[in-house]
Length: 122
Image: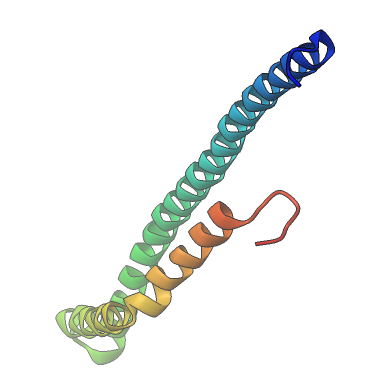
C-alpha cells in the first residue's frame, strides 16, 4: 500500500504542508498575543493618565471648596474638616464596592479580550 512512490510523494507533500501550517499557526499566536498585550498596555496607560489628571483636578476643586466652606462657616479648619470627612466617606464607599466597581469590570474586559476569537464568537 505504501510501497507506491506516488503515495510516498503524497505523504511527503502532506507533511510539508503540515509543517507550513504549524509555522503559520505559531506566527498567528505571536501576532494575536502582541495585539492583546498592546490593547492591555494601552488601556493601562490611558487609565493611569486619566486618574492622574483627575486627581490633580479633584485636589484643586477640594481646596477651593474647603476655602469656600471656610469662608461661609467662618472657620477655615471646619471647611477643611468637612471636605476631609466627605472624602473619607467616599473612600469607604468605594472600598466597600471595589469588587463591583473595579474587579468585575476588569475581569470582564480581560475575559472579553483574551477569550474572544477573531470572528467575534466566543
